[in-house]
Image (cartoon, rainbow, N blue to C red; front, side):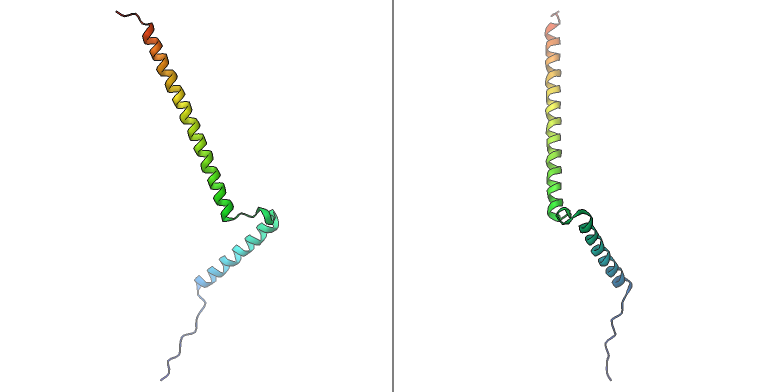
Length: 89
């Protein structure tokens, strides 16, 4: 008795992976042709953009904190001045 191994069949997942792989290849080629070799997005470029965005958000947050501190100090000074102007009873 001889046991023969089943022939590998092409399943739906194999076809889907093949189509997806080909689509990625086409998009990559089109991107290179349209935007140019030097402007193709890379993981390094994406990471640098994320770092720059984080820095920009940190700068905005620091500016907002500075403004809130200034407003708080001005309000406290105004209250102190108002309290000092009131006659003592």
